[in-house]
Amino acid sequence: MGSARGSYYSALKQITKVANSALSLRRICNSIAKSAATAVQANGCRILSLNPQKEYLITVGAYGLSDLYLKKGPLDVHKSLPDILDGKVVFIADAAKDKRVQYPQIALAQGISSILGIPVLEKGEAIGEIRIYTREPRQFSEADKSFLLSVADICAVIFERAELHQLLEQDYKANEKRRKSSRVSPLPATTLRPTSFAHPSEEDFAKLLDFYCIEWLYEPRSFPLRWEGDKIAEMFTPDFYLPELDLYVELTTLKQHLLTEKNRKLRQLRELYPEVNIRLLNKNDFLKLLAKYGYGPLGEAKVEGIDRVLYSHAKIQRRVKTLARHISRDYAGQRLVLIGILKGVVCFMADLMQNLSLPVTLDFMAISYYGGDGQVVKITRDLDSSITGQHVLMVEDIVDTGMTLNYILSHLSAHNPASLRVCTLLDKKARRLINVPLDYVGFEVPDEFVVGYGLDYKGEYRNLPFIGILHPELTKGAEPH
Ligand code: IMP
Image (cartoon, rainbow, N blue to C red):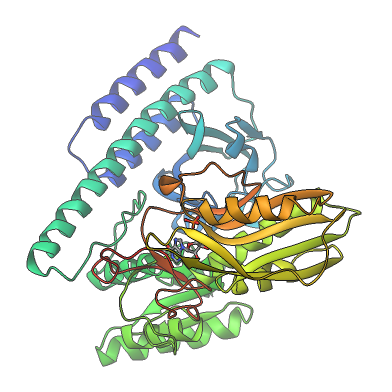
């Protein structure tokens, strides 16, 4: 025990020293992984950070693990030791048999027996994980766990500091850009991306993906292509994986000899792994691909004047499905009347109702704004059917000041429905004047003018498949109409 305590102490001393050094995030985390694994007498360790959407774990540092093991595929937090999300320490006695291990065959092939997962918490919320690996099956003592929890606390501080640096750097670059051209606005501040790119074009590509709010993972999987006996003689690691599109992307350069070699590897990969969706892309190809998925500037919709995309089509669809699941659960066994206000709600209403597993009927109202201040509403189209005694769900595109909704709700409650609730896709809380009760909310949006997915500016932009922020110059002094 005395010697174990001694090794924890010298490990913590080394870890805090490295944490406070000027080394890169990756080198700091590699060193911490080594100190942590050695102190608890394990064979390997990796330090993982959760992506902003809390769906994937990204390796920020590792020790004692093969490249193949580290790049075995995207680590989905819901499939790989999911209890970490609840802030729990997870122990896996036999990695090859445990259901909480996402890639058990690879663990078996790599000779990994036991795994210990320690959550990295920030204000009680999981932001990452320390994972310890052993070749022999073994248990970990309470002292081991307590030592690793302290290491996790240090990691949380390091992550926070790195994120802050990244934001400051982005802010600096954005200001510099703004100084050069007043029309170019900054890219959104992204959460910590502890990735060191092999090539500047990859970083550009990542920024482009961030711009369109497309989730990405950098080099999460290596595909063995050729073996010599038991040994892997050749591997291929595509640059990116885009989980929303289930697509691997390898970026191309213009050098012909490299392109020929990449094409050969790609052919081989497709033969060996026919289920894998992979594309070789240059930047123009990529823009065309985005347009095909309904994202990009080459799409048919009008996108001039869009400052940046706030929610991609895929993200909206995911959120709508979740809302529909909650509504279906809450109204199980009942009939529901959905009421929308024309026209902004059309896209949301259409998607929402298709995902509801309830019998529903549909009705619409239309309103006009009149008066100089534009905040007094009048009903220009009323409901087709009576809602007395019915369960009513008011479906809204966006709640801003709350004036419209407040007016509509008092109009509807006068008809004595059995119940009356509100579901809004967007909630612009910062501008609320009247406190209206919102039962289901898709996203809380910043205080900016948003368009797309039904929302308009002067009648346009409704057909964009994503929700974007209009360039502030266009909306100077504009009020919602
Ligand atoms: P409220 O009465 O201020 O809550 O405004 C609600 C209505 O204003 C919405 O139904 C929209 O039609 C419009 N609106 C508010 N904010 C925006 C926006 O950012 N983009 C587009 N329309 C908006």
